[in-house]
Amino acid sequence: MSSILLDRAETAAGTEPLGVTCRGLVYIYRLEGYDVVALSGVDLDITPGQSVALIGPSGSGKSTLLSLLAGLLPPAAGRLRVGDHDLVKAGPAELQRMRAGDVGVVLQGSERNLLPYLSAEQNVRFAQRGAPAGRSVPVPREVLGLVGLADAARRRPGELTPGGRQRLALAVGLANRPGLLLADEPTSQLDAGARTEVLTALADAHRAGSTVVLVTHDPDVARSMERVITIRDGRVGAEGRRGEDYSVLGRDGSLHLPPEVAEALGPGALLRVEPQPDGTLLLVPVDRPEEER
Ligand code: ADP
Ligand code: MG
Image (tube, rainbow, N blue to C red; front, side, top):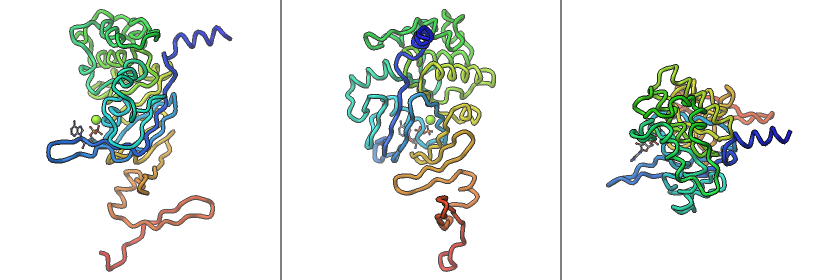
């Protein structure tokens, strides 16, 4: 029994899987002359060890949310916790420590995560240079093995296939056995075979003990995660769990309906709200009164 536990500890993530709490999270890009509100009050809890897909229209704030979770952008308002880190209060040193040890980030576009003149093995080792003192990091070849690149240790990114490069980017994100792995569109621009390779690597990372949050446009990729969260207009709009659809009540009382329902009703549709004796809620589309048309 104890040897099994030991084995698990050996192969599991360096830290425990990390949870995430967002409350009223706001982010604003300040441009010359005007502001863009990219996140307008995100409320979201991710429990340690979950796998979550963020989906939603282009420009809805998915990448921005991922960057906040990674500690790469500071919240403008609201609360944000990643594991023990309070990202509103954290100073640069704590953020640096968190990124170096607890959180693995795979930015969109594999090349943004890789140094082209280093081999696969050297890329992983480079990512390990900032690991906190006392953290035992896996040998790079072990990390490469996790993404199926054990035989490509000496190859440079340019000598790998697009799927191989994306898996190497994943290996770099996993270099320090993070408790939270964040990946932005890790399968975009990959063919079906390469996409499967990346998904397998992600599933292995999840099994090895990381909480996984990824952004994707791909319905198949989204379905492979435990939770599918739709971001709309900078907020959590809806959620799917095991094939069931849920609407999420916004802090301003707004409710996003599943896209196909919203589309069928049209913007401005009037819905009568009828609480039922059994605790369910009935929304009944009604015609607008004559004088309002
Ligand atoms: P998504 O990843 O869902 O496509 P983003 O988080 O990239 O959405 O963008 C959310 C909003 O913020 C969009 O309106 C986008 O135009 C804007 N935005 C994103 N990055 C920047 C930036 N660096 N400067 C200014 N505006 C940005
Ligand atoms: Mg994006």
